[in-house]
Amino acid sequence: MIVETQVVSVPTKKKAKRMNNTAAAFLHNPKAMTGLVIFLIFVLVAIFAPLIAPYDPQSTQFAPLQSPSAAHWFGTTNTGQDIFSQFIWGTQTSMIVGVGAAVVSTLVAFLVGVYGGLRGGVADSILNSLSNIFLVMPGLALLILIESYIKNTTPLLNGLIIALTGWAWGARVFRSAAMSIANRDFIVAARLSGAGSLRIMFAEILPNMTSLIASNLIYACLGAIMAEAGLAYLGFENVASNSWGTILFWAQNGGAMMGGAWWWFVPPGVAIAIVGTSLALMNYAIDQITNPRLRVQKRKKARVAGRA
Figure: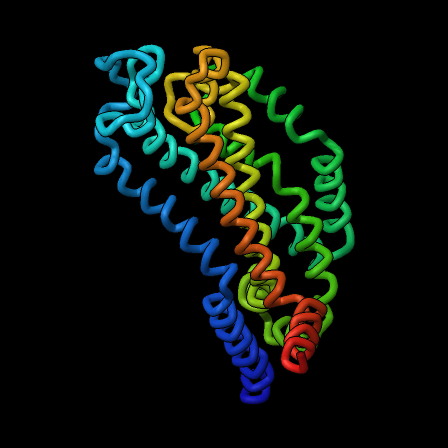
């Protein structure tokens, strides 16, 4: 028993130290911190939306199509609704959909990919075939097909649908990573100590995939926000809900582009672009920290700069 404890604890200490070093490197990376600060600003806006929004987003008590002013920072719609209030509440909805869908899809991808790569055999063949089926399906067409059968979906329901149809790419990556470490010493030691598959997956394999999981979460979040906005813009969502996509939907139907009401459609579009940029910066920083080739290139550039 003493020997088994020693065999398992040494890799655990190394993994904890490596995770701490990765977290410290992330917090000291300028790109990562820039992206994280921007993303956290949107998260705070989403959390405190009831306190930030000055008006009821559905209220039509104002004059229509007012340009931005001190009273209405983003102007008003053609029915007299305050666009800034809609934008704030839409931020809450879009962030909940993005983060929630990212967590669900990453969890499904991890369970399917890692379990198949760890177990092998028939289980791996079945799960891999299921992943391949979802991979070959066109994502947007699949979402539109599902949405056409579900009328007046809410943003949260759309987020769940996006999560349950967008896990396949992550599962393929996780499966490959699990297969590469399935026969390492610490996995064998865990199996000999009587650990089950779930314990091995979450206690032994998961800490070795932190960078892959973080990257999958980031891209899944961005994909979910864009997919929800696209579905809402196309009308496959309850148009009475508040999200960045529904703002774009009503701007299009209200003739904002033709009428020159740029303040109606620019804020949600710019917000989606800024959130995407913040997520891309964080993902690039994670790749730069965890990818050995990029670390070597960075050192070479630093040496060249030092000699110059």
